[in-house]
Length: 537
Ligand SMILES: [Zn+2]
Image (cartoon, rainbow, N blue to C red; front, side, top):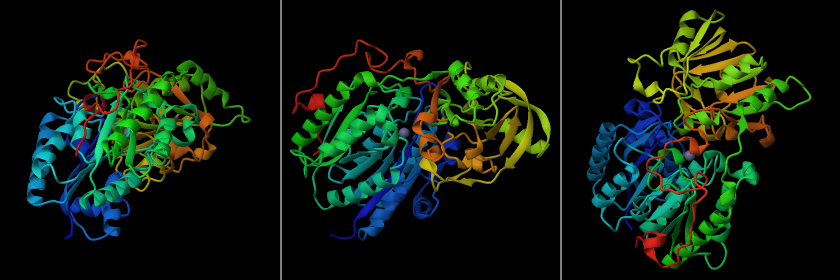
């Protein structure tokens, strides 16, 4: 075979239907790169992008000759639906890149699978439809997805291999990129694949979707492990390339929400049977997908109780205001309650409040001032992207504060999902408020990495209490300080609350567990493509 020509592109964002619209600037703050600039960033030691594309490129470089044809890669922190105007412009760019690339032997798409635009439930499907139209039916397309993907027919039916993350907190982006490269190499030398998907009427709240060391009390990691084990056992060994168990992202509120098993195999029978088998195992665990949170009152009492030094320090997760799920990273419920209770020796982060961070920089290190959090959320002139559209969660709050730290240069991620990523948090400040130190940032991210405190010289090991604006990815960063049993998931109000019955769903199929107790499911019989999914041959 001549040197294979492989197009590279991507669209990765997780969209919360209830959060404000995401614009071009939200992508520019993370990754909006094309052509050789994108490719060089993927090959750099500290790329801006998450690990799939760097892993894919490294594996392709290592496994033989290839000619990369890099197109636009757009990645953003989870947010609301993407501006239709901006997505349409990106579609033009992706199409232009593909047509300019000329004849292709393969395509790699970095997708997330939980994107929305203002007018589209399935922008990944829209993108894949265009890619398939341009390259035709015979050029293999491999796509990687976050395990928070909601799986549409197009997401499965238009690709030749569907590869989803297998870790939550997400630590295997690079490995999945490597797997995508290895799979595409096989497909480009003639291997044919068959896909199947089975969806369950279960929309798992985010906190029930942990894997790895945190999975022992949760069902989701068990399903992923089961899929990995079964694909290596009879009758599936040597017939199955990938098993992806997609938990989905509830807050996208699409007509295809629901835990979905996707199998990529060398024959349709293996794909259908294994997808059904894993789905049946998921349905058997259906009662385990119910969140068990700690009330704010109890969380406050436990934080206060850490004054007893014989107790282990605790980490409190503000799971309902997780920027990693579209939360604004600025609700005050926990901060206010902990201050009122006199909680001491605590670190709180990271609060997204550009106005407050800028004021701290103006006032200078050591200054005492009245810190007004969320001061202008009621201001009608304020940038829509910062605002909680419902207005019911991101309330103003004021407290006396001392400027304890200032920073403006980007930071390099140390552990977990952001490890080795370069992150520009904008103007940042550490404020001493009562017995707590609060880190304030200007570019919204979830508090998944200890570096967000350590960049101010704050000692996490010495803290009695740490509060993080994060749902689960903090576990991959802070696990060197806190054991599983030291994590308290707090039930405060917010845009990403795991209590799904609190939201006004408009598109999600109903009934679904755990929202509706009446949900039922009957396993599809194998071989019925309409029930089990789509074969791509
Ligand atoms: Zn995810």
